[in-house]
Length: 205
Ligand SMILES: C[S@@+](CC[C@H](N)C(=O)[O-])C[C@H]1O[C@@H](n2cnc3c(N)ncnc32)[C@H](O)[C@@H]1O
Image (cartoon, rainbow, N blue to C red; front, side, top):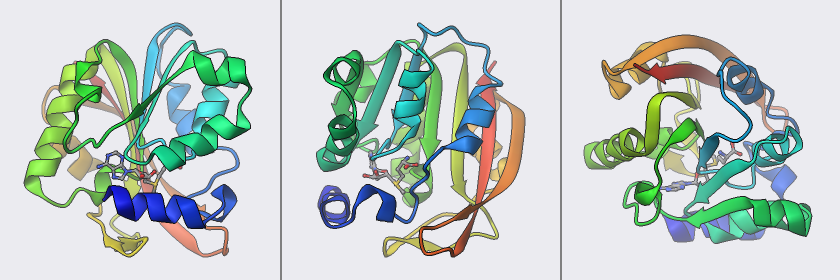
């Protein structure tokens, strides 16, 4: 998987990625519903080259963790940030299905995942993802997950995906999590082709 993602990030410019967002508006919408302070921790799992990190920095969040299996991806974000901003983020190169570093994190107030969980097809990978999420998330912490919806694409970057709706996400997270909000979102790829996503916000009870 690491080679797969490294290869994609090595070949495509950030704004050519088929998930690139100039402004991550749907994530921002759900984040605005989370009652958190600027010094609480936000973990972006599979952050890639996402502009969500830039947004969080610009909003003054002080405890941002960007994790991804691809170091090349994270370097893309670093390359467009000032030195000061780069050093204020914690960068973690790790595989969420075999976490070495992420599982040592604690007290995350917001777990943000856009388009990562849907690549985990094996039950074991999903189990590790969930147990890691539960370990690192603080009490009453929030979970934002965006995935291809049931009406969405069945593949991305040549990889099969598992499609979700809010009920499947709720079932995946289990009874310790309350569904606070959700919506369908049509994302337009740089080519102009639409992709259907489900966005959901949960809170650990
Ligand atoms: C479709 S991209 C989405 C990137 C970013 N979340 C965004 O919205 O722009 C999926 C990202 O997940 C990362 N990824 C895939 N499998 C992963 C894994 N097992 N552990 C950590 N990151 C992973 C990829 O490197 C890639 O950056």
